[in-house]
Length: 252
Image 1 (cartoon, rainbow, N blue to C red):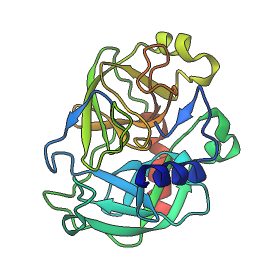
Image 2 (cartoon, rainbow, N blue to C red):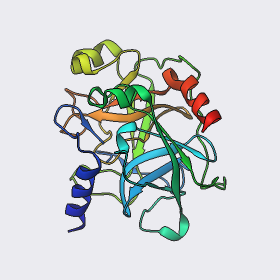
Image 3 (cartoon, one colour):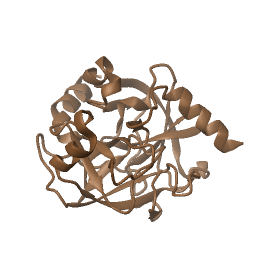
Image 4 (tube, rainbow, N blue to C red):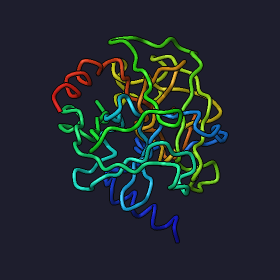
């Protein structure tokens, strides 16, 4: 029953879920993350249900995917979590301001600029369990075949939901190959795609693509079959939005 409710909730939050670009793409073929090894990770929740990921970039701002908010629901951000069932070890903070990128708002079906900043109602207390993650330099590119990773509380290989934070190793795919696989949906300048045995799935949207200790991408969309070799998972390229991020944080 819980799984059915979660899926119905997901559908109501993200009405534009369709085939080829299935937004809100759990970690498949991954492993359990070491407890609090990724202290920047947050769970976005509505009505007590996880549906998207995100990550702290300051003590009051979370970066996530624009498609993770339908413009209506009041979202809760859970910080310091590992097991989502363990509410005592995490902090639940309401979102004060939602700032999706204006280019996404003007044409959400194209998945361009699938990036959003969330300002929390209060600053988080940074500690060993709650930390921020650095962002790339403006315009910075990641070389093909660079070893990176993704993480989230999304669907597992068997389709079940995960209460534990999962992670998987991935590698950056050549931009030309990404474009060949996705066609016009893929923007060479604004997106990154990856390959690997494991990867993102439903419920991981908004979570970070991490290379080294830097968040270089935001989980955006993928194929209906998670971690498809024909249609690799796609991430919004954060380095293209650094100036916008700085502007929003300075003004909100």
